[in-house]
Image (cartoon, rainbow, N blue to C red; front, top):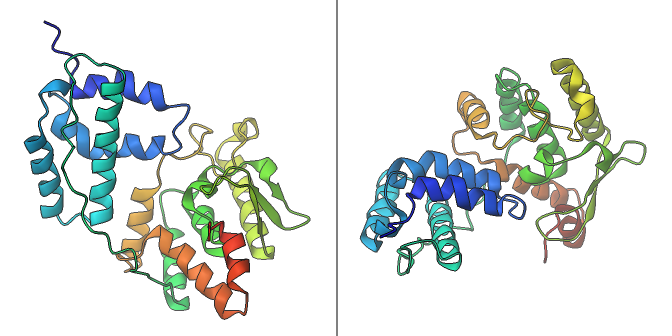
Length: 269
């Protein structure tokens, strides 16, 4: 009887190739698989993974102190993978072992704002990062309130330096928008282009502003260099998304309307 593939074989040979062209969060999926799911389930037959196995796994994540939102993101991926396996009629998979495994309650009201002193310490730590592109990426986030993914996927043709505007063609909300850029933000992007050219003379061949110098493609993740920098600055509790909160707060404090803030940040409401 065909016992079906192992979890690792399904993940690498079937799941990832199938969702590569249509899933924006592919880089996140790869990271979650590599760091959390494959070490635990990789060698197991997909059909042999039971609800108790999944419950024990997520209990272990909580015991390690993982935040509810992070744990839920991993569980969501696992659920999606098994639903896909059922839809694709993968041998041996007849039910989803994640059914009945509850998400943890997330504290979505927790907000963290960056003070001027903290911003200075963060910039100083990032300046010493082993990733030379981390500086301009984080700087653009701080100066525009954009999402991390929007910065990593930014293309050269999206920027109009004369007008000081940045077109985000396919943001999270699904509607293209323009982000206004002050002189400092424009200088940040120009500086990133020059830096990339110095790091890799073949940079002109890539369409991305913050391309990985080794590949010419967007970074799949910047977490490790970001985590090293924030730790060095003594800001272990600061998340990248908090930079967006801080920018929104600064806009409101400067007298901008909530409608203006909504439009610039690309919020649905």
